[in-house]
Length: 214
Image (cartoon, rainbow, N blue to C red):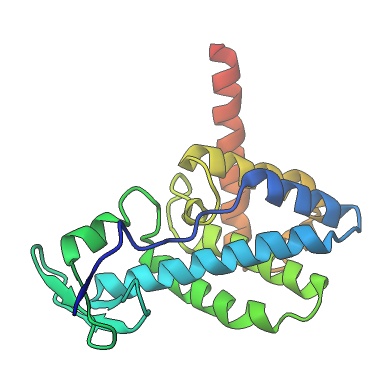
């Protein structure tokens, strides 16, 4: 007996900006809220796992929404998926449609998502979890895309592209351990640091422009 697809596969959501902002404010003040850090860390972990599953599905290896076994398919319109493990069946059109509008597709972020999924569960302290949260957010933002106006972090953080852009700029400038130059170089190369400075200036110009228009 086969089982039809549920209404849609379940995909993890993005983390709220407010939670990240509070986490970084606490960190800059030398405090570590274990509950908040765990909340953000495991929300990001689930999100990364969903993004990895989505990318594999787009490449012809969908995870069965019932038992999570891999279902190989042609990723073509009208194709049917059938799980040999549990008997579930569904259409690729429905499976693909469940991803629409959720910002789950970001091939350039896959190496960072995979590294986070590998490393976060091994973090045995709040400090180490904070390290990997910081690493993921900033590496995904600056290396996941070559276009400053299109942040890869929008796949991780809830909000529109320009909102996430401005949020990350304020996070870097104001709450990331005081925004000191040595802090900014913590995870980024010299080239990335220069890109950050240029982007921040452009973001500040846009903000002043908007203020002048109001």
